[in-house]
Image (cartoon, rainbow, N blue to C red; front, side, top):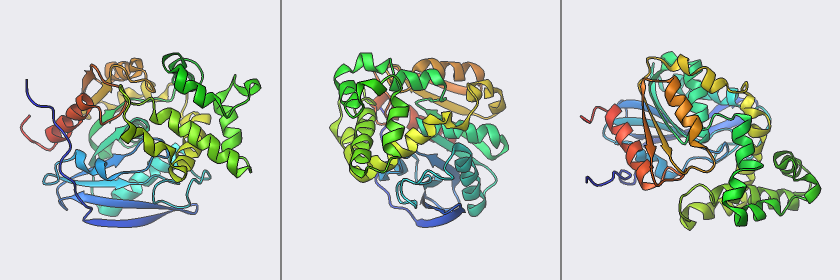
Length: 319
């Protein structure tokens, strides 16, 4: 058996900057790899998760010129945790602004979790700008997916962690957990806002890996991170991502002709594999890898191996 692929060595950006995208938002961006090599854009999860140095390492730096950016309201983008003018379609427009800024006609689009949602929305809107598409931990934001994670479903798998998620919400409001959290995350009580943000964020951080990984989950409890993550994520999910119900699966045919790779863990709790399977059926141009013994996080060894395989393959590494 061959060794599993792992991240490329640590790398610093060769260029960083900010872009004023209007509506008071300024987004932070960075580029890594080799300037002028194969262009790619990395779309982080959440929404509201921001980028991290590890994401730079999913691409061969000798073969890629990668754009990474913090989506509106999170990471080093400003204003922090801002919800106004922050929707899926604002972000799709931001991706296009970045592409035009660096002057490339097409690029590989890579997104995991919420990043897969955004990648699909972008690719279905601007198919002629996508050279290849790599998506992981497929999330299509159907109501059933949201209910599974925030109302009933994953609660049955993690009753101990679910109890902590319930804790900030009075029993009388628990029939609609997303709405109850929305009230607190957008309210004037700063202490209640932080308490809700931490509970919302840690629920995700503690359920995305097959086995507990404190080094992955602990950052979700940081107040600054949690505030943007929880507020923005809840804001997007309360609005169904400003997508029609089932839109991304319905419109999978718009991806026809785009080479791609779909990677999904068999035991992905936040994102049930059913929807990755449906995407696979609707987009036959993509290779589909259902990774056994894996949860949701990109860092699960089997998932990471397939992601590096995908970026190597599309860089012409002879795979």
